[in-house]
Length: 264
Image (cartoon, rainbow, N blue to C red; front, side, top):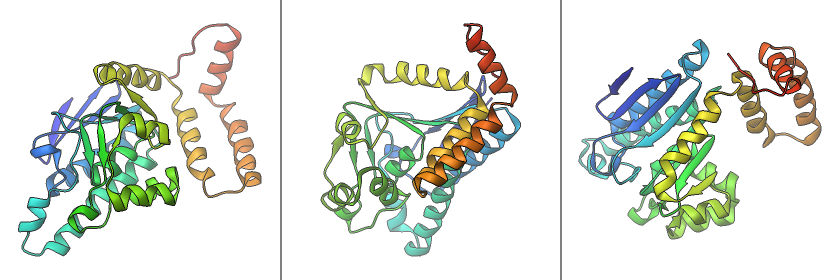
């Protein structure tokens, strides 16, 4: 099944893998159409996770650039620029929240250049795969603007305020290799191997236990706002529940039988 959402986002589901791809537009810039397309795609991911039709989601982009960020030409020519930008941001922010809250793994595959809001979109994924020669640059303050799409939150939480401010205020460029070394992304991959590595990662996630993935994602997300005793209590309660679920029973039996488990 393949559809084009709002003329800017391709939606394809094959073998319960949803692929959300930015298409058309110079540099895959984020205009209102792209924002609405991404929000609809994120909603579909959630619905697919609930009904079992989607087990993993992939965020990618066509062309030589992942995403240059907001469409400044559209913003500059909007009759009422402030409200228009706020409306675009609202759509994008809801998409990002929905991707982060989805009870299935979300993978972003980043190549070329990623800037501005494209960084927030890429970092909304649970696993971020980036070409080693890709270039990441916030670029907001370079044009007199402030960051959006959750980039300040993601950078501050992953890197700490010192490095987050360095990137946000100086607009220095990080390569994929540097971003991985800093702990900002999951992996830097040779550009020629990015598609193959992404396929391997997605295949592993596609064959995994949906309940184990959903609860693991929830636990890791919750950990940042808790002390250790609270996290330990949640971990104990969760594993005690999951071990009696069909996937837990099947996984343990497969381990004891020395075979690969089959989940759903």
